[in-house]
Image (cartoon, rainbow, N blue to C red; front, side):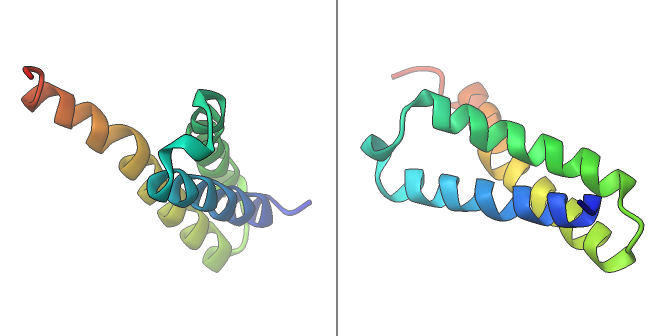
Length: 84
């Protein structure tokens, strides 16, 4: 399979998992969130190896966006709101 298609698929699946979890926290367990974090990492690696410029750019941008939304923003927010 084309690495660009793998990257786009990883982006769409992780975005769907995160969107479903965002609107209903009880819908998924922690294992689904682990998948939502690992898929963008796999997608970024696949985007690096993709040859097509459009799929490479879209996969890299989309997976980076999901990774920032799922990992980096919550981590930074814990630095500021660590007291009850």
